[in-house]
Length: 470
Ligand code: BGP
Image 1 (cartoon, rainbow, N blue to C red):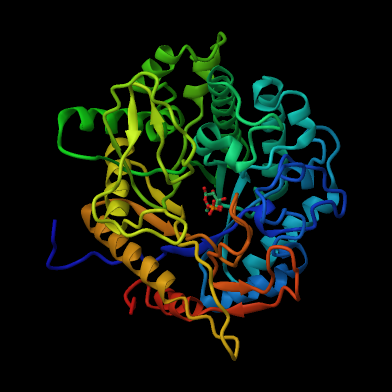
Image 2 (image 1 turned 90 degrees about the vertical axis):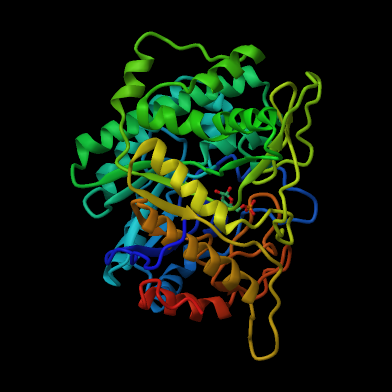
């Protein structure tokens, strides 16, 4: 739909950007921090580990100053569970609490709203050794950890996110380093883990409402509209299958406290339905989100897959679909350009996705990731001309405004990432930030911060409340 006049971004719109603890902090074993699954993982050849990352742990003041200079209204970051509970459960590490208190207080001193993700791919290794999310005790461990988070930070934090991209951990855990040491688990185990995470999330949402009545909480999955490769009814059905399995399984459970019926039938077909114990569904229903946070990078395109044994995940990741026998298979998108890393670029798909979520759930929405991974170059005079990133973000912000005009209750936009950090599986030279961090995969150099062209551009976007995009 075209409009003659567009609605404005709301006046208190949360312009900001995002990071996650293990991808940005470094200080992997400092000040009492315990090991997470990311610290013991195997890293793809040619890519760095997460030991130093962007060293935000030691640079947070300098970095937050840069965020303030850009005019951020919000900063979305995650708490490393192992920094405050080194073993996942048990003794609290005061130094970890102190670090996040410092970060939160520093943000607030500039009037930047902290948006806190409680768990972003970094399960404590001590819990993983006891079975990780396959073990029901991890639900209690997460509830206990949530309690510590709410007790420690709930007096100042108004927005909490439960679990980052639970859907991606279930679909691509081996790639994201969250699947444990033996690589990908069988589907039966994965969907049991999924059930446990859903319960943990529901308990945390309930606890947040009980303990911090003025705070709001929501899930943070990766959501992408799924397109059929053609208008053939069979392709449309395949797209609906994949969307239920990839998107709605997670949001239906978070918002309505029930399993999506197509996703459930898929699990039945594969023989991987989870064991649901007495009282579980009541727990799911009792946890209600105040809003939906979601990460959007691109849409997915799929086609009918008639062959039962046509399963292929070899080229798949967060934004590249795969093939499931008799359910769907990845197809080429029509006419969409791709990033250097092969992810389709689809700003209109962003509007589609916003509208779809709005129609299904009718809740306020915040975008907690969106962005372009690229090999940035530093030219003479410390110039980083990342016009391609500006172009990507500009087109997505334009579509966000159209979605607001469509009636979507969007209250914030936090692209990925505030500063350069280490990608989940493609190293630190796949950069996303507004601020360049001077390091290579294996040469830490001086970790100097350099403002990219997009830094100045985003500053203008924010100060004009989304009016000035050129
Ligand atoms: C999301 C994750 C982030 C982030 C981003 C970019 O899936 O929530 O942690 O890294 O994708 O992906 P990548 O790092 O694989 O390029």
